[in-house]
Length: 254
Ligand code: CAA
Image (cartoon, rainbow, N blue to C red):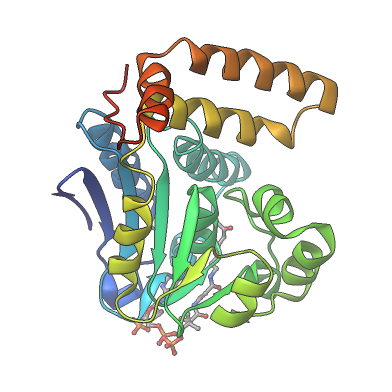
């Protein structure tokens, strides 16, 4: 139900349960965790998520599995989803969600846990949990306001409203819209950064990701530390020399 494939220096995880619009059963969430772990052992420079079947990226948690559970199982389910998606925050390379159709509830929460989101013009996104008498449980209440601001996040969470691709782009929920295949756009987007050195990419991502949870003075100290560390890399010596020598740099992740 989850396929992990290799495409050059990219890993692609495909949610493959099209008959249920790739809904996240707990088994699929565990498979996603295993696929992330496996991809982490590969020599890759970006990780892409997409959905099989052409209609959906992922329609959210498997609603049928959510019924009639004891309280502590409900809590454990939320923590499993949160923990699995949170692995992407610290994953060794950036991740992209190629949103090829519906991305609702836990599906949008998976996409929001990725570093970047690109979408097909027919994609539809939302956090409809309120319509089920629930609230988002796999990170949506925390990641959505960080991406789009409090007022827009509250609007989506409290009304459960579906947002189309154009609106998602305008509000910053997705980075780009595809003109052709959304997976091709995700790969082209990845190619814009996979040529840079992994140390600088990782320092930069770490600094930006810590910005929102950190007071400015502390964040600036983190940036000073990480930017100083970047100067100490061989990639920085190469990048600076290449500029002065008017040639293309060759980064070696050192
Ligand atoms: N869980 C389980 N099955 C689902 C599902 C889900 N989230 N979403 C769709 N399916 C199943 C449907 O039951 C249907 O299966 P059957 O043919 O066996 O009945 C099949 O997928 C196709 O779905 P539809 O016939 O409904 O397709 P549609 O094109 O008419 O509608 C849709 C598409 C608007 C996405 C609609 O399926 C829908 O509203 N799905 C539920 C979306 C949702 O509420 N997601 C949030 C889940 S809760 C959550 O995610 C909590 C959290 O924070 C972790």
